[in-house]
Length: 397
Image (cartoon, rainbow, N blue to C red; front, side, top):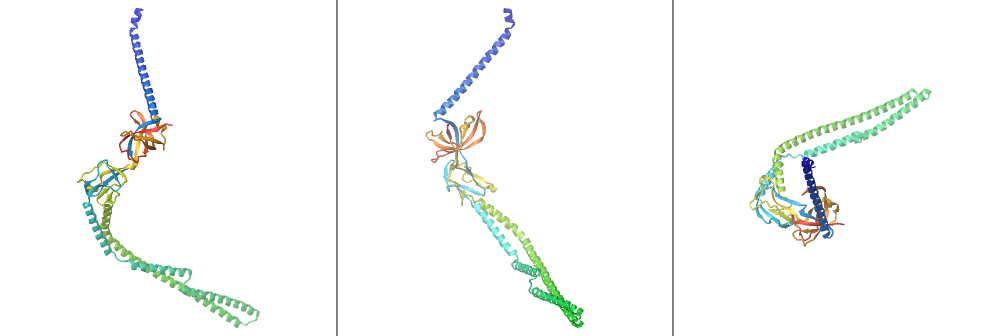
């Protein structure tokens, strides 16, 4: 027996060691589980202690931020605010020396005026010529209408004559036909028949003459139209020549005028901003907080017309609280729900707030998944400041 023990001693020792390791691992795992359960129990207990609510950490942030920048040559002469100062609408923040900018605009204005005066002197007047062209166009339209609808006075007279001549031809033909029958019957003489035939020939000639006169009148109207068209082409060619000459002359002048106008407009627009009042940078919002002041007295702004940030304004009316909710508790957060905000700086203050946004994305932080939730506080006393830490209490129903 002893020999058998010695033979398997090594294996027995290894097995015993493995058993001891497994026991130790089991004990550690059990302790971790127990600690976790205890922690969860503590969390539940702590939430129940706060009027049956969940407690989350949050940070005061803002939705609106304004960059105050200057993109024209100027110099800072005085800074009226400090970092974190509260400012109101129209309050002066910074004063500027804008003499270089104003001088540039004055120079551009003079260049523009000189160029515009030059334009007026090189343009030939075409008003009278254009009026003649309009009148010729009216005459062409009128005569073409008279010709096509035969409403010309001469044509109307000839048309009446044509109608009468046709009637007389018809009557003469009827008389010849009737007398031809009488002549065949021996009731009238050949001389009488010949008289009616002569009358018919006269009527037909008169009809032909009227028709010829109508054609002559129409041709005369067509010639007038042709002459008017030639005159219109001549006038248009003359107008084109004058306008082409004006255009060629103006092109030279317009180049400098256009450049001056563009440059002037650009420079003017640079100083037309809701946060500029003459040479003062002012607050463009009702309730603001100054931050990131990046200038000092004497700082040159807008070098080579590149924008220079002077400072930023936080819109204090856009203050929100961004809180981080653990994934396991997000089901309790509902849009529009009322929560309680307690600043870390003064836990005696309770500020109501409304859940306005729940992120659709979870992110990892400190080894756990959290969801960003935004709360809009009802804080008329402005107790919450950007960057402050807060506790957010969410009632659990």
